[in-house]
Image 1: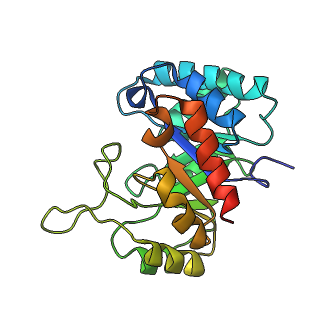
Image 2: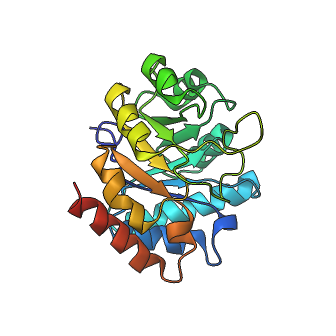
Image 3: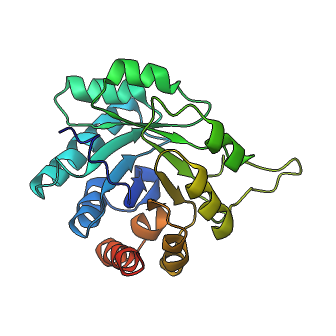
Length: 231
């Protein structure tokens, strides 16, 4: 059974070097040790070689915890980085792309059937989009933001420039109509977890709540515990 077959997006960490003041792999290790189930390396400033180095260290940290077969390690957008990392013998499980990134069909062609391909759901007209989208090549939708957040300045906006956010009622409706699992993030904090879990969404994703915490391990522990306590 491949990791794609047992993908768990319930506690999903998105992280890059610009999000933290300590090595990325340290925070990845802390989060995975406390129950995070999926890790996405996302950086708009690191070079391909720098991202490959981060992946190598993060994959090693996950392996040392004995979770390489259960915790997915993904890369945001950079299919080239995934392929280069794999060529170097690094276990990278897939890619997450946005609407304007490399098409999911191309990702699937190059990564194979055992890999994970996630897609950011369109922010505008979210419900209709997810209800009617072709999901034959993707494993989950990433949706949000729940709140405005500095870590995702390029999210959808209204005609007058206001960031489009999605409330809990809309997320609950999204879960009902989506044919595949949905993970929601965007400014998610510990206090949001009970209401988010109540929507029946399959998971939450965070950046700053863990990567920017004074104690990332404690923050990860509290988030995972809150999620399971409210299922």
